[in-house]
Amino acid sequence: MDNISNTSIDEQSSSESFINIGLSRYICLILLSALLIPSILFSLYIFYWIYRISDLRNRLTNHIILAIFIISFIQTTCEMPFLLEYLRYGHVSFDSYSFCKFWIAFNYSLNTSILFLNSHLSIERYLLIFHHNFLNRHKMLIHYIPMTILIILAICYSCGTVLFVPCIELFDYTSQLCGGPCFQLQPSIGTFDLVFTVFSPLFCIIFFNSFLIIRVIQQKRRMLQKNVWKKNLGMLIQLLSVSILHVIVWLPVTIVILIAMTNYPPPAIIIELQTSWVLINIMYIAVLINPLVCFFAIPEIKDKIILFINYLRRKRQQQQQQISSTGRNQIHPLSTNQNQSTRFQK
Image (cartoon, rainbow, N blue to C red; front, side, top):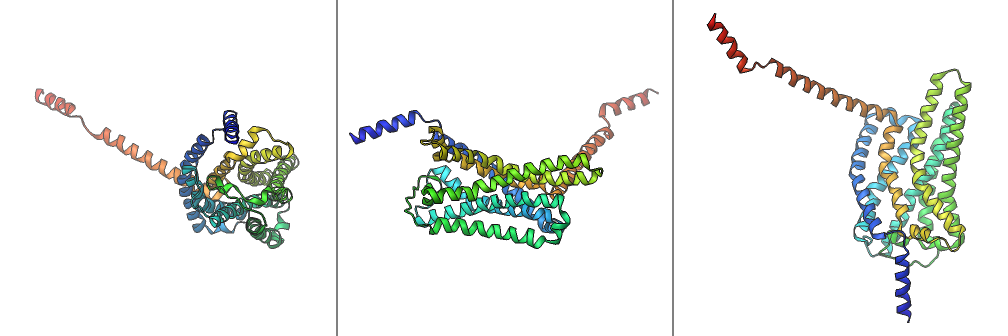
C-alpha cells in the first residue's frame, strides 16, 4: 500500500509540475557554457589593461568595481566548473561530505562578498558625488577599511555558518550544491542568514541607488555648472551599470523566498522554483556578464577598446581602398588591343 500511494503521489506531483527540471538544467548548461569562454577571454583582456594602466588601479572610483570583477572572475574560473559538471551529468563532481562542505562555503562566500561590496559601493558613490573632499580626507577609514572588512566578514561568516553551525547534514549528491546547508532549515538561523546576507544588502543597493538618482536629478535643476553635473551623472551611470545587474538577478530569488516564508504552505510553483535551482543558476549570468559591465563602468578600459575597434575599422577601410585603387589602375586587355588597332589604322 505504501509503495502504491507513493507512486500515485509522485505521478500526481509530476503531472502538476510547472517546471521541467531536466530541460531547465540543460538550458542553463547551454546558456552558461556559451557565455563562459567569452567571459574569460574578455576578463583576461581587462586584466591586461589593469596591469598596463596605473591610473586605472589608483583611481578611487574603480577600486570596488575591480574587487567585484576579481571575485566574479574567481567564481567563473574556480567555482563554475563544479556547476557545469553537475548540470551536464546531474551529479556533483565528488560523492564526498568534505567536497559538499567546501562547495557550499566557497559559493556562499563569493556571492555574499559581491552583495556586500555592491551595497558598500552604493553608499560610497553618494559620498563620492556629494562629499568628495570629505571622502578623500578619510579614504582610509571610509573606503579601504570597510572594503577589506566586508570581504573578510563575508568569507568568515559564510565558512563559519556552513562548517561550524551544529546540525545534521543530509547531502544529496544528485542536487545542486548537494542540496544546500542544513543550517538554513533552522528557522532562527536560516531567517537571520537571509536577512543578513541577502535582504539587507539588496535593500541598501535599491535604496541608495534610488536616493542617488533623485539627488542627481535635483542637482541638475540647481546647478549652473553643466560640466560638474555631467561628471556626477557619469559616476551615477557607472554605479547603476554594476548594481542593477546584480539586483535584476537577485530580486526574483528574494521575491520567491519572501513568498515561501509568508505563505504556509507555499504555492506549488514557488516550491518548484526553489527545488529546481533555476533562479539560482540565473545569478551566474550576472557573474559571467560582469566583464562587460566593467567595460561600460570603467572609462579607461572603454576608451582602449573603442580605440582598438576604430583601429581595426580604419585598417579595413585602407585595405578596401587599396584593393579598389589597384583595380582601377589595371588596364583591361581588350582596351589595349583596341588602342593598338587604331594606331595601325592610322
